[in-house]
Length: 151
Image 1: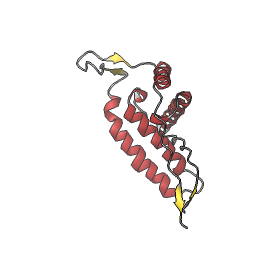
Image 2: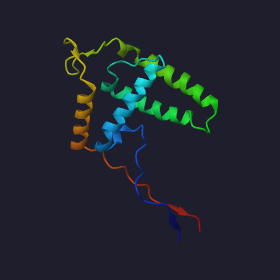
Image 3: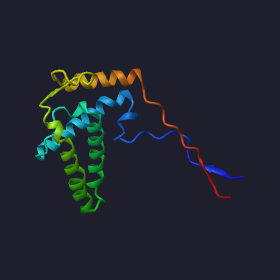
Image 4: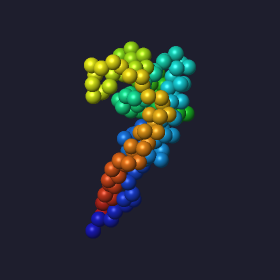
């Protein structure tokens, strides 16, 4: 009879997976991303002022932040850091360029033909996301069944 090894507990979501981030940690993750965006700006890479209102941009920044940590780990190869800049940062800059034209204003999503409205303040936006997440938590990840070991 096969024996099983390992724990059936569900793994914690990786730091770049904000969709599964619990409400109690979401504000901290957004604050970490805000610090990362500030750091990018200090590197002459200004992010759009409305970055936090675009889900795709939040997800890409979170992944880029985690990638940077790995690319600059003590055991990383210098090529990892170079790839982070060329593949990660340069690509994101190209992709977010249209958002730079928003100039802090967005048309309402339900009426894109209306006059643009000011983007919400960062703190208020994050508070609303945390409230929403608390009311509608992400589904719990399924635990992997333990792997049987060969006899």
